[in-house]
Length: 396
Image (cartoon, rainbow, N blue to C red; front, side, top):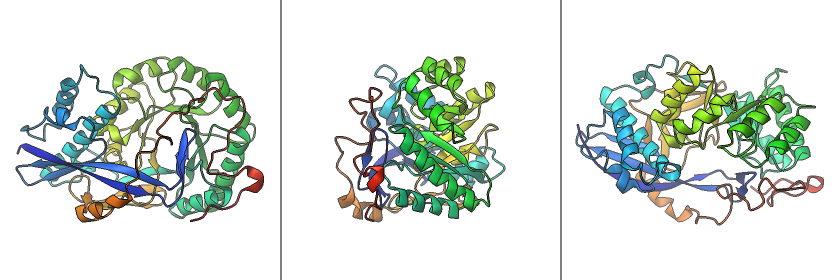
C-alpha cells in the first residue's frame, strides 16, 4: 500500500454561543475547522483534523511511502522542514498528516486505533471545558448543566482577567456539578491562557484558593517560561498544567527539568505520535498527561494505551459540521467505538454546503494576543459580557 495524494477541506464548528478566553472572544461562536484526507492506492483514506499550512512541502516527505510506517514517516516529515522550522502551524500540519496515517494503519489492520495501540479500556475520562469567558451567569450555568447531564463532574473555566469574576463563575459551576454529583466535591480548573505575569498568577490563584479548591491552573504565564511556571507552582496549592502549545520534546524538557509543570498537556492538532512521545517523557518523570482539543479523537484513542493518562478535555458536545465519530459521552467519559481506524467519517456534501458559514479570519479573538496582555493594572470584563451588576442572558 502506498500514499498517493491528499485533499483538504474546511468546515465549521458552530457552538451556538460566544466562545473564547482571556485573549478574546468569537461572539458568533463560529470556528473554522480544517480537514486533511490522505489517499492510498489500497482504497483506504485517512482523516486528520488540523492545519493545512505548507502541506505541499510536508506531504512531499511521505508521498509514495507505505502509510503503515507512520512513526518513521513522522520523523521524515520533521526532517523535511527542519531548516524552515517545524513549530506552530507547520507542526500542526505534520500532526494532521500523522493522525491520518494512524487512521489508515488501523483501518488496514481492521481494528479501532485504540485497540491497535494496545488499549484495554475504551472509556476515556473527561472534564468539561466550555471556552466560556464570554458567557453571562445564566448561560454559564445552562452550559455546565448540559455537561453534568452527561455525567461530567470536573470542569475547566476560562479566566484570568478579573479575580472576583473568576471566583463567582467558579462557584456557580462548582454548585452545578456538586448538585449533579449528589454532594461529591467536583474538580475545578482555571485556564488563563498565558495572560498573567508570574506575580499576577500567584496573587490571582492565591486569592481564589481562599474559598476554592482548584485542581490546576493552566498556562498561568508564557508557554516557554519554565522558571515562571515553577514560581507559580511553588506559590499556589493548585497544580500547574501546561504544554498544549508546545511543539516538540525539546520544548518540554526545560519545564520538566525545572519542576515547572505538574500536569503535562498536548494538543490534538499536534498528532498521535507527538502525544505518545510526550506521554513517555512525562511518565519517565512520574507526571500525568492530559490531551487538549475541540475534537481530540486521535488522542482519545492514544490515551487508552499510555499508563499516565489523567483526563481528556471535552469541549463542544457536537462535532464540526459534516464530521461524525464513532464515540459517545456517557458517565463522565468518552466511550470509543469499534469502527476500524479513528472511526471518523466526513460528509463532504455537508461540508461543502456549509462553506457560506465559514467565518472570515478575524483581526482579534482568542487566536490573537492582546497588546496589553500581562500588563494590565485593573480587572477587565470581556466585551461580550455586561458588568456583573447588570448581567443578562445573551440571546440564543
